[in-house]
Length: 409
Image (cartoon, rainbow, N blue to C red; front, side, top):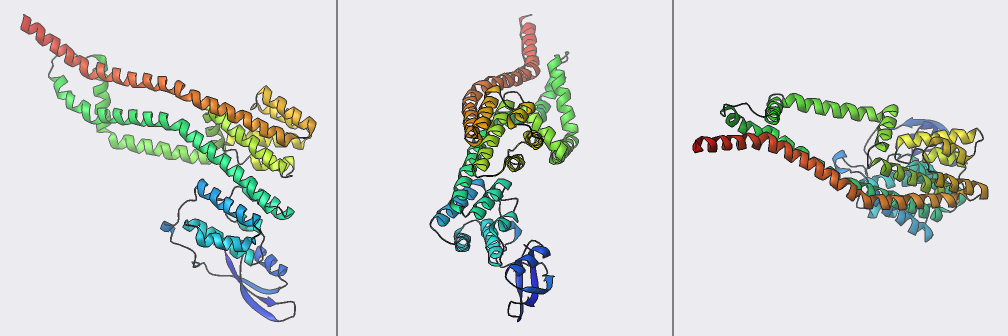
């Protein structure tokens, strides 16, 4: 966070100087005014390493499990009545993660300089999501920090469980596909070229499958650098495109249309939406604010755009159930549960039930996924073996049959 050197006068009119940490010059001035200092000069300090800062190669990404532990520790300390600055200083000293040490020390400095907790956490958007920041804001303004941290622990654990489910669903198919690609590459680049002289000396017309394999092998061998460069360029271009707003929405919409996996991705996004919306509404956040926050936290930009359209509909005065129906994302049963929640004024409880419903469907679909994917993988492996058998071994069998016929003659 940027630092500023200031000079001014305190409440007794005496000259004071010092340093303050803030996001910008206006925030620094506001912090000093809260401390009763009349600011006469405020200059940005030259960028320099803080003593807590570490070289770039020593820092590492904060994993979700570490974030859960960090939030659990804050929950325990605030529940025990430990002041937040003291709690943060203790966590900064005890954490084994260098990046957590740096971030927590930065938050502690902001609080010591007179900033509020929400603003201190908001300076690290890559670590703390909008839901995390808003729950902290609710806890800070209501004086119920333990309840806010408890809700965040539940939210992060739900995110961790969803991530584990997704990894479990993709692990087997990705492993099989990578094995097939590796096998095809080895056969094309190394095995087939060794058979080409044998085939050329046979003196007879080769089968179509063999000619296709030979042509593919020669093309891959002669233009391997061009193929590798084209693949890398295509991957980079696709990655850059999906980083754009329109490209990201298109890519996430495409994931929802994938065979077998599309419905799984959809249910995971909707379960995350329902659970997050229930948590925010139970904390007293207005529905429009809830929809705006949750739309950026569902993990799918296509679903997030649909949620923002729901927010627009609610702003116009439509019911939440009607806007949800127009999005086309929810099943009739879920829409009926939403309608009951709106009528009874317990939409947060009903959204928790919706999340439970989707999570049960996710569990069932994951159990069925192996039964659906395994036959498909076996078919693909069978096709690969068949191509190799027809292309490589069929000419050899024909050569052997011709040799036996000549010997018999």
